[in-house]
Image (cartoon, rainbow, N blue to C red):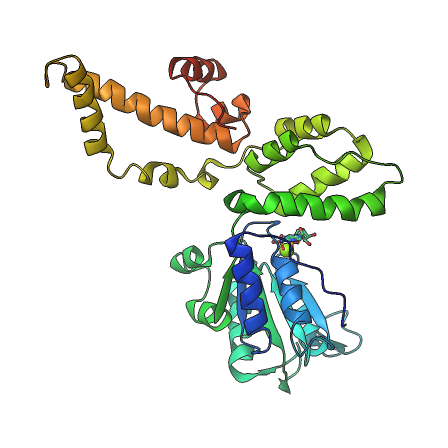
Length: 351
Ligand SMILES: Nc1ncnc2c1ncn2[C@@H]1O[C@H](COP(=O)(O)OP(=O)(O)O)[C@@H](O)[C@H]1O
Ligand SMILES: [Mg+2]
């Protein structure tokens, strides 16, 4: 109740926009859906919404919908009456009751079963709920903030998530991009958590990250997002050796799933590939004196493939901080082939 506000650190446009949105919607009480990968800051944002709202002096109750099986989650949310099931020796109020006048944060809402989704929809529509084993309806006044790392739209298409509930929860949507898509936030997060952990975990003087380390951190794709970055800094408090921390990061963390790497952004810059390519080819030919002398589809194919391969390989390498073994896994080629291609296509780190 009325807990301290933890700051949302970052200078990227997306973080600035999210902060602005929080200040606008916190007083409205409109249902909010926060989406984004694990570790991007969904809990932090939900808590900031609460502390910025007129409900800040009431309860903030979090329920993780993925953590409990259906019946337990149901009694956790709505409570039960004595005798509702074997073992229900006395009445127990649920989280809806506990969050009354305050905030109910439904984390991992995408994992809720369809039948619990129906019950939730009913509560959101009527503002009333009944505990298990009771036929009485109780009024509730909770501000529901939900979060998920699933694509609910996809779940709706697969009939795993109710569309009507989605629209109820999603009056305001806050989509938090992964850290790798807002790497300009990395230096300020590093600085903030370095200071915070230095006083908390370390009695000795611990080295700050030098520019070259920060640069590597900026290039790393952070599949675990801010939480992974925090862990790195905690590790530094113990090891006091950034090279080692970085080395462990690059060699032990799992490669991001290929789907997380957005090839489209690389390739869409080349929407005009054909004409750009042809003009480049014709330029080559003009240099040799005769405009079309050298045009052959076979050569074009080879040049085009090399060009695209070079771009994709450079992109993937930059996203994994030039960890070639990780890059070869993502590209599904052998380590040796990757080394050969780096040499043949003259690919260099762009730092
Ligand atoms: N922008 C940010 N500024 C400061 N700390 C952040 C930021 N984003 C995330 N964190 C911190 O990173 C950790 C993971 O964030 P969390 O909100 O639990 O992520 P999620 O709920 O999306 O998995 C938390 O300790 C949180 O305070
Ligand atoms: Mg969370």
